[in-house]
Image (cartoon, rainbow, N blue to C red; front, side, top):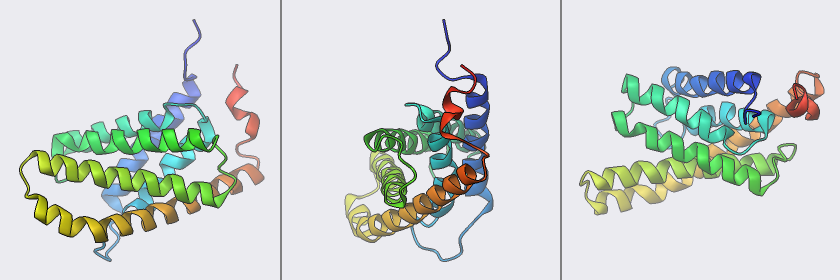
Length: 182
């Protein structure tokens, strides 16, 4: 039986999943605007999905980064951070499939990045409501937060598409990379 992900794909997705966690930990954007970290973490997520182009690639990277975030407890939700990362990976997977992995178009990258960042925000608020944070506080904060999550996720998605196109032009990755080791 042939494995779903090849060994080189698992290695790439694992490294990029860990990079999501490291970038979120190391790069703090000091503008104090909700969702601004999406500008950074969306890059490796979309690049990994854009290179592997298989359903589940984003979910796998979300799992790796979520396990690391939960294990090291760097987020506000600690162990439950895994749900945010799994949700963002799944939403990037589904949105990428909707656009047939056409990351040559910056608009596709913008939409995929915005959806991923927005989904992460929604799961974050859902978990907070589960713990009893009053819905009034969440509703007041969600309007500005939703807008900024969409904007920063979209910008990160555009940057990811530009990086992918540069990697393709430089010959680092090709459209045939998916089938290179079959």
